[in-house]
Image (cartoon, rainbow over all chains, first blue to last red; front, side, top):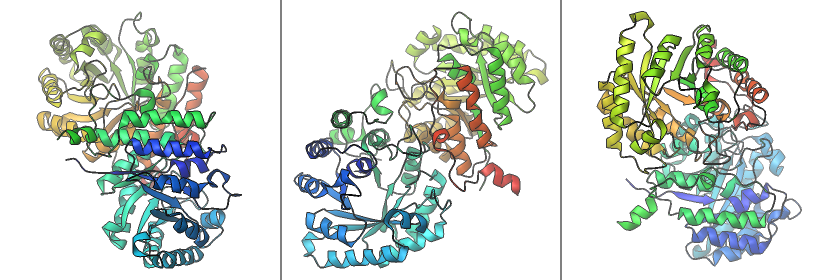
Length: 315
Length: 315
């Protein structure tokens, strides 16, 4: 009953953008290399946004160049607009995500653009990508943020999310993803919304969930996602970045706990758990004073634990 | 699609037995009353064990007497042997649980008894209960601890758990429960083991799971339990007691997060969430210096949140 699940590490982007410390480029490179060596196959390594807005990610082009040198690694980046898209294409990233906030209030506050304006940016990036030689075209995902609720608007109707997912696909995205930016999602909602969006855009066009652990439901929402066939989960090593609105609560779900859960469930994520846990040392050295989250790193692996990846390798 | 789920609060027993501080009797009474006022319908209020072993629970008889005075509350206690069973019956507790550790090594270390000896104690308690007038007979549960793995034995074979569940039912228990004492369980294992045990003892004879959050998978395991029809979940307010083997990791799953998740999922647990969150004040006042866990208490309820219990009440 083993099945492959992809963990997409977003710590170098979502984690680092949420903290004040700036991780030096050599540490970023070492972190990304160590994650890949522990079996992580996809990493969102940065964002192409103006350096004065996110100085933590100002070196994204250099980080992409390093990450691209790692065999077998899918190098992903986030871009808020065409300008970012141009930099991303130029950098040679394998995957580009544009976030479209389902809450228009949040979209205006976050990227100062309406839904219509963001869909325009999306179409422009699609045109740019299609103008590249076939072999060099990155995969382009529309990331539906605040899909499960918004701290400004409250409830985000599922119908609105479905409509925006359709519009992103019509604009030319290769696929869409659902993001619980605010940590509002619950397992019943995850199952319901995934089913609705898949009904509208097709099963193969929604494979990923980006979940936060703001209210402790992150891994519970992963289980719900697995139940309805989701195969890619974003997570952040050490839940890096925390959540400014919830002291002590991690932001993204914790990669270490997610990897432990999947491997324990027999869902091979390709991760070498002891190696992954050891990677935290790079974080604690490079980001002194930043809190590192996660339960499995403190508790350790269970006695007699056999991860799915190792048992598959043994077959 | 609303369905009733029972949260069985075990903080006054499992939480308090795991910390050094002794909560004074008046605080215990206030805590239990406040929990019940927030909608908690079942509370495990203590254990009948020698006071020199667990001084924190030496006043269990008095706590039971108080809890029994609260209308509509099911008052549960834990007993390790016949002597504890006698005290429990005398106290008038509505529900008694005897823990049988699936790992015999753990059983010997924890209660210094083999499986055969624990099954003897179980039969003796059954005889005692059946000697009571019908109206005064407490419900008697066999709690299969270390059912998902043991820190001493490692993997606990599912077949062994199934056999012990059958033996507990043959010994005369009214039902069995599965406990992840060590925080080893994963969602796939929860579904598998619940199905196997139910196949052996009947669906109605396994309704409850007792989960820990040692590796952060507590609520993920609840979702798995819900998928296979479990309707009662043990949890502890503020994850009280933590886990001595996992610094920073809570022991039992956190009642506040569990209640938020269930209510958000449309599974009415009967809980008034703002009232429940306010009860933490009693804990922080009565147990200065003890760490209180949970994500929802820090993050607060989502904007626009409508709990299942309130929406049902409005119908």
